[in-house]
Image 1 (spheres, rainbow, N blue to C red):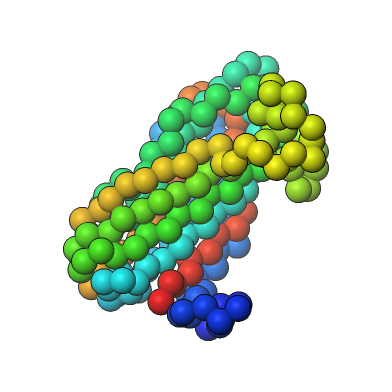
Image 2: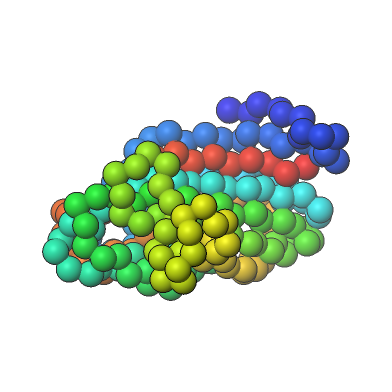
Length: 194
């Protein structure tokens, strides 16, 4: 699905919705790296000076009664361009919310640079969860204080041929094979930055 959208406030280019993924993918009961979503970049879309933004979001449950970890990866074609550290999740019956956004820009026809941000909230029953509550509590900041920032920020490069169709795969690896440790992908988008 492609929907052209003019940027607000007189921006320099167009933002195009290339793909929307609203298929729920649940990963649990495995320690094998598993794909949450695959977003497809059309051939020639990563030309010099152009790029894409991939976004994926969902929730995480760790209800196994002990700490567990998950590790996210972003792949462009055959290249892993971003890998998070293993993220420790304390046990809770409540789900955490997560959102991963990655910008990939073409420096040349065969060199791409990527910058990504991963937010994971505290385990909470809210629909719109606070991603910085634990940090503010440790530092004694009031809940209305906006200091803090992202949980994880990453940078990477790839050497893929931008003239080809390229898949962006977002994967997760869990530390324990248990039905009560799961990462769920609920929505993903791929936007063209032109």
